[in-house]
Length: 357
Picture 1: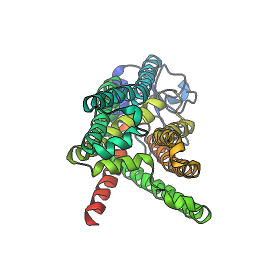
Picture 2 (picture 1 turned 180 degrees about the vertical axis):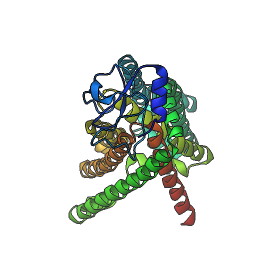
Picture 3 (picture 1 turned 30 degrees about the horizontal axis):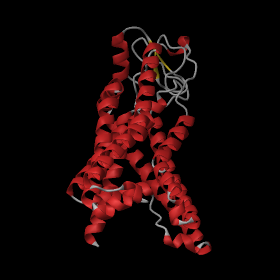
Picture 4 (picture 1 turned 60 degrees about the vertical axis):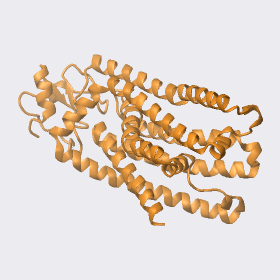
């Protein structure tokens, strides 16, 4: 293995640098443990003096090297990641709700709408004020994503810069990781969709109530609804799904969660995947539970089952993206690219099907 970009970068910073004999990752000479896999480093075996000493069972093929953080850098990066995660959830589930309630309240007051007499305000606005309803939803989504990106990207800019430089210096490995990653994500998506369809088919044979319920997740239904509700919502959905969501979600659920620990293990792939799946389904589950008295217990329970099945699909996608990130030596640009192209193909496919029907 010859000197790579990372080796020259580390060497320029001064000092010798060690290659982990377990995963092949390059580490600062002051590190006692590998910055990627967490295994103990052996200074007498792995020092670099102009070339890397080969070790047994070390393979860096099909992976992208990343710059190792020293202990102070790791602690600083972890703090920034924790702040990013907290900001994400506070803005998404607290601030957005407060702002939405305020805007809707002002609109209803200006229109003389007595909200105390309305069982479901969302349904009411959708029925009688569709233009306001869909433009408002699109605008709030755009505001949420852009405001979060404006905060999170500067916080994690060093990680983005480092991974971007690595991608440029290893273009071949980057595109190989991207291609394999996209194929893996599509394979997981097809497998999980097939599983869900088989389970739903069985449930429909046993419980007729499932025939009345859409198998599409609440999250996907909202996206599809906005896609065909006007030019502004369409533009917002395209921007969100292809650009904003891949950047923000990968920075939070891959980069930030993996930055919480120095040792990058498969456990974090599962943890981040589970949380990724949850944020795509929890809002719909809450809505179903809140409307249980109106839709009935039987329909409500069946809807919950369908949403939980869709959680499996999002969870599987989260696992796939986490695994891609892990195998790409935690290069965030690989998963951002995979996520973006995957969403773009899905959105374009949905639009084409609608126009062809």
